[in-house]
Amino acid sequence: MDQPTPSLRRLRIANAVFFFLSGFGYSSWASRIPSMQYKLHLNEAQLGAVLFALPIGLMMTMPLTGRLLGRFNSRSILLIGVLIFNVMLGFAGFSSQTWQLVAILFCFGSARNLFNISLNAQAVGVQGLFQRSIMTTFHGIWSLAGFAGAGLGYLMVNYNVYTSWHLLAVSIAMTITTFLAYPYLLHDKPTPSNEKKPLFSLPDKHLLNFSFICFASMACENTMYDWSGIYFRKAVGTSKAEATAAFAVYMIAMTTGRFAGDRIVGRFGIKSLLRISGVLICSGLLLAAIVPYPLVAGAGFIAVGLGVSCIVPLVFSMAGKSTTMSSGPALAAISTVGYLGFLIVPPLVGFVAQVLSLRWSFGIIGLLGALIVYLVSRIGREQPGEPPVAATPIQVVPGA
Image 1 (tube, rainbow, N blue to C red):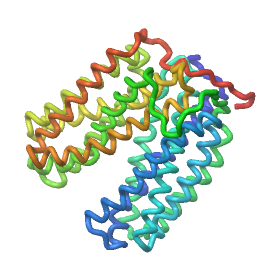
Image 2: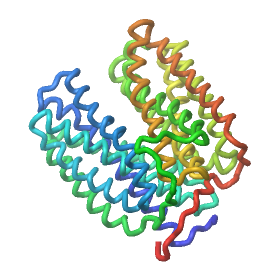
Image 3: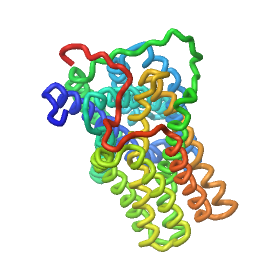
Image 4: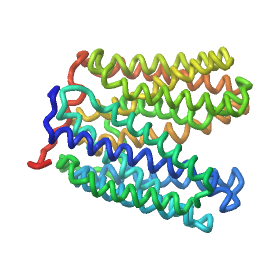
């Protein structure tokens, strides 16, 4: 369908709106973390412990999300997730004690998981209705929303707007937008399984390659979030401003890659783009590690940003073809393994850096890019230009 009908355009726009809400809400919270640290008088160690409540909530809810998506449609789960996400965001700024913020962040992480996994299940369903790839553009919108949320947060801090009022206003605006866009989401139906599975289930053998690719990509992505600025300060020897600019360059490259990804997939196919992505990650991190000079390391960061940009959305897209699990549970199972990389690997970078150096840490992490290339070679063949998702059967209710 090169010329989508108005109803398909509405489906695509509605999904794009929710990807924007996800990125904007999360970055709005992240922009006020220093303000909350000051308000609650937390040192760095205490702040790190408090912030860990969010990924704990996310990981603990992951298996439950898969179970829910196997029994209910993703549209309903998305609504529950986004509303709790919005409410917790609004509450966060009013925390007056550390335990309150910990509880809110735990619920925020849980809601973010419900929201994001069901949103990706919706996106896989919408992708299945299009002849060409649209999946990476959704994630590009998430990245743009992250820039917008961070920019608004910067303005709020500069104008001394209370964190509580800032986050409450964002929460209200997002809730209003939620109810405006929700009617246009895909009316999908789950594909129930008669097989009884434990609550904490991992991907089946058909999805293991996808899971490990996600693990490697998300490990590299979060390593860049956590360590890119520090790497430029300590290993490259730049100023704080230059280190910040290096992270910004990485983020711009990642966002650009996501918006270009769908066009590249349409020309060369998903597997080709995934292989190129692995090569870019590996070469970019090794380049930054071997030649730690600002321009060269910056070029390496650009390569890494382009490399990680499309892997997760494309893996989600391919996992939608699974005949052994329905779309929602498959995404939840893959995400469980992927987020382990997101959480576990970046702290290991610090341990390796302590024993060896940051350069060694980045060089070792770069090998995950080579692992991605190898894992992609184990996936079944796909013809260039083939529709990127032949999603698991989705029943579309008239009027969707």
